[in-house]
Image (cartoon, rainbow over all chains, first blue to last red; front, side):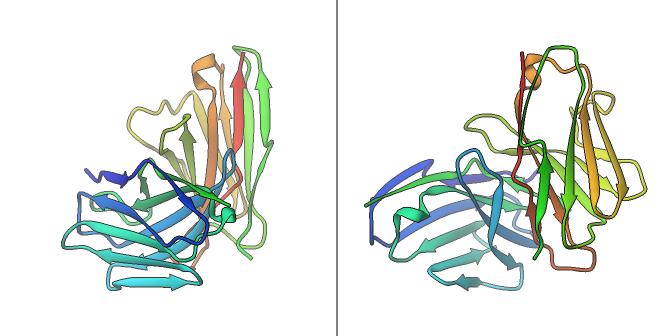
Length: 113
Length: 116
């Protein structure tokens, strides 16, 4: 059974700082892994999708890496801004599955101006 | 592109009533839609997978007679919470996968259900 864990649960940083969010998963035979952003009381916005054959994906100030062998993914945010404040969720398919997603509990990020 | 809408965004109802939530893919066709539930400070939990023209597949522990799902077209899926009770109060989010598109799921803005 796929389990996704995110550490830390919450993170508060000053504006401009570079930061790393961590995600670990128990079943390394995943098809892909996704990172999402959720603003308070809102839906999810897809940030990055990493296929199992890839090691990282980049979009603007965001970089996500994937290490299947260790069951880990990281989301790197460069030069953080107050607008980056949100909860960041990672999700991976369940064991043997591809369409469904198992979510971590998320990391609540606060970037202070 | 790839926008998913949900209606209503917020609903308050009395215990025992039924509530219908709509999920629409606005600019793409979605053969598969997913319904999630999120309790405060908890992760999203998949409730069911909805496939156009066929019965939904429910996750273990989710009552199919209580949470009725209909996926009547390639752009619309509905979730009906029947005989709602206070413990059904939650944030319900749908997502959709684009037919023939990438693996990315596109999420709706969510529906906040409060059962009094």
